[in-house]
Length: 597
Image 1: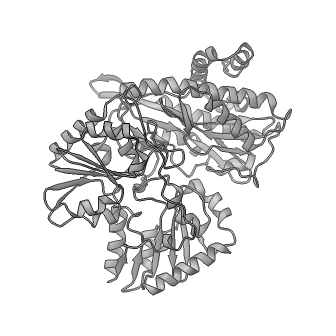
Image 2: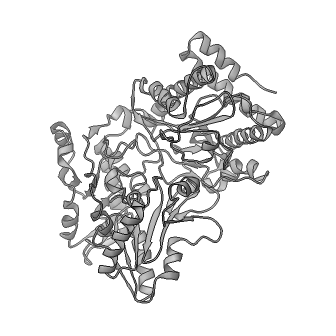
């Protein structure tokens, strides 16, 4: 198989450098979750296309570590290769660090490309090697250099996000950053994460598919800002506007030599967002202040302008999803509709929205057993015809000037089993349970996750992923530091206190391999509620408006409060969405948002 041949060539290079284990993460120079084609080195060696996973190559082993979203997909894509799947978080499965601690020989060497491994991870590998009297090899992209016909680094044109969408000027954001630096004693701040840089500068790009960012680093000082990027991606107007705000544009790779030239003062950076190679450029004479980018650049707390824009665009997006549901229900079985053609139709509906720019991720459209794969992606080979039976899961979203959307609905296309109805109903109960939470300030998503997961745990079912994630503003559809999860997953960094202005998804589900998958997903804004002698109470405000398919509801699994919550939600869906529909669509929506008892 071609992947095993590629691994064989890599092992030859490892032997030449006395490397025992070589790590290939899913990452770029900026610790991004979603990466451009240039960085898909792991895919090249393993054939696994999921957005998360690390490949470890040893002298006589090859293993892929990935999380519960991708277990089924990875199993299928690794078939026939020598790469073994390690199911992260499963009982008895070691972490990569634990595996290396056990199997690295005395005096052994761990290799990785220091530009795509963040400092926090690099330090872990350093420590493991040190315990064995060994070493790390980090200053060469061995695996990437063997990739024949590797794509070039992306370099799409950069564009301005106007203040009417961003809510704050670039100059104001830089002043706030410098104020934080001064308070913390930092004379410089290094930012490498793409979403943070785009947010700080009110700029967007197209270097990563469906994530409107551009490849860059930024070094902020009290009297100047150096932006390291592909200069050719910036128009003369943007260069001039940056210059007026004290931002100097420099070549992308210059950041490494400029860091080496700094000999005094202090440097602030987030160790989980700065790559290992960058950290090695910092002189010993420079004092490093480790910080969290979420405090340095609090982009997760949306300002009032951003929130108003998000509310507006979620109605537009909800209209598209509602029209899609109407079209699907009306036409399934009467005309050929497949997973791909349905996904394309929804994409067309979104593209007609006035502020639309792109999808926010590749649409997940899975029929029947395909929906059991949380991140299934239909291909011409797997694409199937939808029939007037079973369920169809569609997880999708858009990038708009007014923000980023993410919504999942599972549609009942015809007869389903009693078990499927039970699962569908309990997922609806779960999503509304969490959305209607009232809680004291200081809670994190870890405190609240049980509200969504509880109804499913009660019947002995779990979903092997978080319940929800933060969402950026015309940035990544997955944005730390907020999220809903029941156990700590350090690399997700989503354990922050829920603050007013944070936007988080609420997406419990049921995934029965070989049978069906169900997910219902809404986005929530965290807002302040009453304040009394017990403290500041918080709650959520719904952002997402689209029907939850009543054809899948069996009320025997709901209590009166569940029914009230569902009816209240559907009353608001009709109120917000119906003004944008024609009479036939309105009549249909009235039926699908009718009160149930």
